[in-house]
Image 1: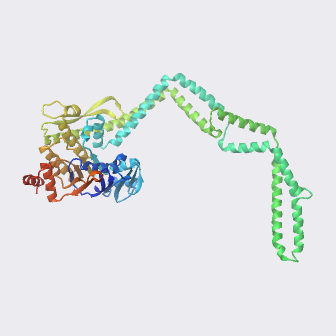
Image 2: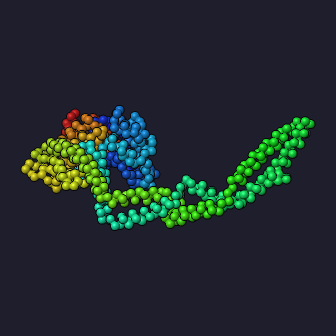
Length: 549
């Protein structure tokens, strides 16, 4: 559950640290005091998009941190471990700069916006005050039903399989309509493959080919240079080796007179050995020098052919093997396109895979539709719509779609004898609010998110219906942590705990303040919600009765 929320320099909040309790909590206060700002701040910590305008006027940045307590073995804890954000709790932190840039952190580790949203899916679910209007859209109805059935990953998989089926179908159709064009492309590629393959180009041997060309092209210069080196080293009358040998012999004669010459003698002897090694290496190299004009011409011709091909196809010489491989793959593809039976089988296989997974999705939808229809219908009887009926209709699609084998439509009959019709056309504004709230409560009950936030979802209801809504939220609060921003005293009175939010100060110094309410404070706040400006003893008595004091 949500344990702590820290907000700094956000909209009209200068600095605020709140510690939350379990159960059903109500957030109340005058309109514009900043109740929904707390919900918006929590949304940012949960990965919603940031807006530079949310930074408090005159400040460089805003910060929001939300700390959640995790139960052992919870999906949230498993997700944190899987993504290297291990911790006994989950701390989501968001920093927004006035420039519009924002940064996110999970347990102190930098995180992407997508990672914060993924974590949020296991931590909290926020129902906005206009959430019921979204339920008028077919796609929102379908997504809610899939979420209720726990099938959103399966729905994504079905969409991917449908895309693969569509691609296979388009490939078959394109092949059938482009037979001549494919044949021309295949002929051209075959000629290009033959031309480049004839080069026998090997990227790993290309460097060695270049070195061989240098040796062959400069063979005469290499031979002359080696001969000259050997002449001065060992084969000439004044060769260095003989002179060094004579110097060594002379020092050996003198070493008996002065042993300190031993170091110099050892150096000369070492030099003599190195000169001998150099002479042997040069003689060996001289024996391998090959002045071969025919081989030189052959290598030069090969290099020229490679460069010509590279220029022709606008690639580097080293990229010719990759080019050849790409052509080969395209040739295989074109050969497959020639075979209508292969393409038809690919299409059929993709269709079978799609239909199999889509049927599994449909089974889950049928089960969830029955449960949702029953649950909302029962709730409608309590929400001043006796005899009302709610159902989820699944209209089968002949060929299916990316989202499955059926359209999903919420239908409602608000009164006995009234024919059922689409939710968007039959329900009035007040009925839509009550039905939407019932759907959200039932959907939340079916999920496993530990913290539920309702931001003025009770708009458009009042009286006895409001009291029933409060009871529904209280019942939900016995299983989860429920936070509700409300203007209705009947709802707030059902809460296990209550805070009031008010604005303080004036001009640029205005700020929101949150006050936890004790017994007397709750009586005063409920009385204010009941009586308005003037609060009488009778109003306070009524408030106390509502609170059960």
